[in-house]
Image (cartoon, rainbow, N blue to C red; front, side, top):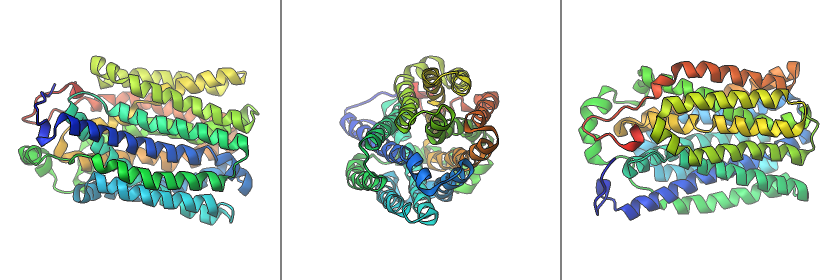
Length: 414
């Protein structure tokens, strides 16, 4: 574990690192709250536009398309601009996209697609930037904390989902609901991220320049690193599981179990609550057992939950399946981000690559589940998630920590 002095690591005091950790939590919570606020109103948007499952899948593709435009560039943006300015700017852009969605869906599919694309574009860069800052704080603390930042994201999604359920129950319009969310995020997040610390200590970067940084001087070279690509494959599978739950649990409960809209939204909240709990308490498992055994075990839990959710004979048992599914899907993305950022000087580029691969799940997932849903029902289509998780366990060894040359091994890299 890294030893702290009065001046902390890289010139930061422990108090400054604590402030940075809190600011990082706000960035993750804000991102999750926005996403779930939108996701909680998907059924109402679908009904307004009379979309089939396949059509809805294509509409949801716009978010992933926007993210995939931003993600390959995000590493360079963060490296040149820094994570604080990136998150602040993208939070405002994301709020603009959400405002367009809240009003545009009333006019038709095209304005909705434009708003969702902008939302995805901003979210992609925001995602990389906050994960880079999270990895920086994790190194300063000398222990695993990235899953707790992602627990913050999940807590934001739970809050967004529950507030969405309340808005549905009270009959509040999609427009009014999402406009208020957009204003909150555009104001609070830029203020909070002022507490971020520098992404890469200059001495740290210099000590690694002969290894990680010099091996490839540009972001494109990170795409030629076998370990980085394999980490991306693992993240892809877990992101596909997480994204499918986010996009389709609500609809699957309404259509497959004939549940009312509020029950569908509560099922979505159950999935998110399970993810939040495991992300918060799972850091102890990672410190004790390591990344690979934990992720393999959680993949088995997710598959069990998926099978229960799909084949349950009644709705309450499907909620149990949703809980297990969310618990199992919880740590794949944050652990992948930590693995990508093991070497600080290369962190921004590698996180960008891994996030780009992971977001392919959000690109291909909605239309794939929607297409299969038209032929097999949405519930049966979700079985493809279980198959992908099973395959991902074959390459989880890529997540074994890489300790930067010249740096003591910390608890976060065991």
